[in-house]
Image 1 (cartoon, rainbow, N blue to C red):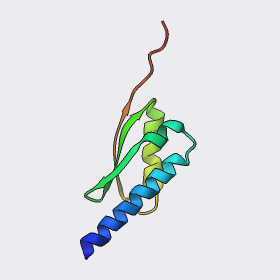
Image 2: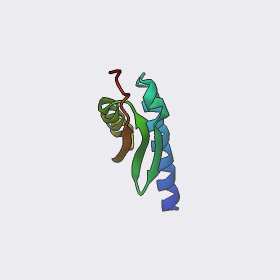
Image 3: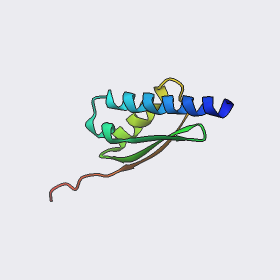
Image 4: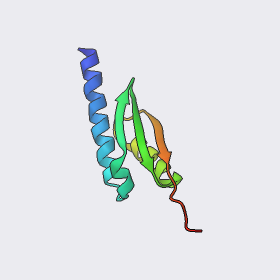
Length: 82
């Protein structure tokens, strides 16, 4: 029974983080994958800047019920014209 409660809490945390990321107003954060494992919320996917990577992490940490965040987002910078 305890493990079921923890899994439910983690599922709720994933939903809260995904919703918070969508509400930032930054389109790339809408595509961040949010999962949970061992009481840690994991962010994965690609973003175009280190700023957005950090913003995603801070947004996740502020979500209710989140204690730890593993930020596996990859920063993919667009090539600038030469």
